[in-house]
Image (tube, rainbow, N blue to C red; front, side, top):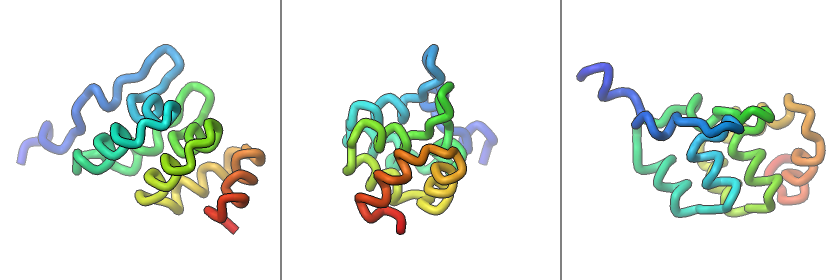
Length: 107
């Protein structure tokens, strides 16, 4: 298998002027269909790519919570939940962490 076969499509890693990847953008708008496409369709997407933060230091899970997209949060938490929750807890975003508690995502 060639190295290029292990890399995700380059457009999934593209960032806009705010550092948002396509996954960040679809999460921001609650586009669950596109989120599933990005996350589940391509086996080459890794944990690190799901955890890419934008220029404000927010990963897609935080963006979904900030915008009230509960189903988007659930989709994201189907993949690497411990790492994502740990990132949010360490980020000192207490308002988002409180929202997770309200939704019984963390205790």
